[in-house]
Figure 1: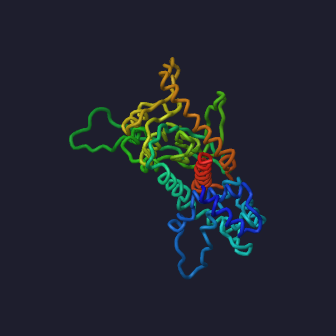
Figure 2: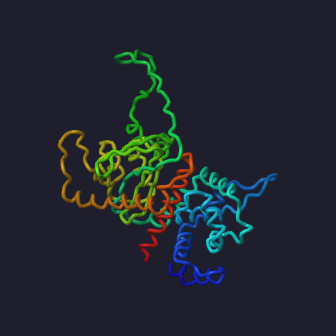
Figure 3: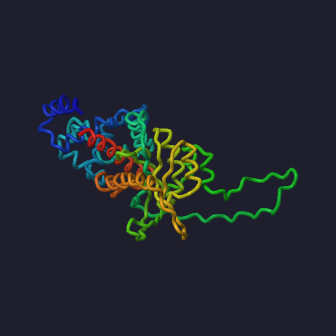
Length: 360
């Protein structure tokens, strides 16, 4: 940050037509941390003759990072902002107004970035650079509702399964594996990628009880987030809104354990399940889970566990910042891949902005 402030900011002030504002300095600092342009050539296919040459996708990727920071809800709003603000346009990498692509080009680039999972690639690189060699105390796990702009997918009627004969199989009889094995039981033996591949991702209708005890419902998705003690997001998954939080816990434990070394898993009552706690212990962590009595009397946490559990509020603050500051509450794109990219750009900007807060 000292190098950015001493050398980069004065250079930009000489190059740009007007001095940098505080928000523009914040954008420059975030772009320097994120460096999204480093990951674009690996994702976008190379130009092949015949055909029109692709425009500078690196500048387009930087513009989408600015979209998350400036909370522009649509690509049209981003395009108008780039047209009117010379500093913003040049910071993103467009030399002049004539070099600014059309809205259609922005949309096609966003589709290409979504297909290549650019958001996850950049986020994983940030976690590897800043946290892979650190010992993290607590991972706080939580989900938040994401309201979509599309109709819920129609549920496919399940075909009735033929009933099996009772008793042991006859000699030489081969039986297929029981299709009714619960998803959480399968996840124990699966890799993180295999378990994530089985999670539903279509837009549908979800419902949950909020902190005040009222039941809320929405059409869209769910964002599942693992956050460390200082509010840096470590892992993020986007699933259907109807999926229960407990179905994502084991994949997240495995995914986060591959990225960082940590000690405690902090989870609320939605994650209270024996399989989840056993998996956490198998990976060398200590699970601290709020108890779900399921109609019976709840045994309170031990005093030391209750004190550690208070740290879990960092996950709620991260979800709140994503919605209020980085566009997670205003998703205008449709389709899981595009919604995921929109949210992951917000997660990436949150990661960088939180680092800037700590450095300041």
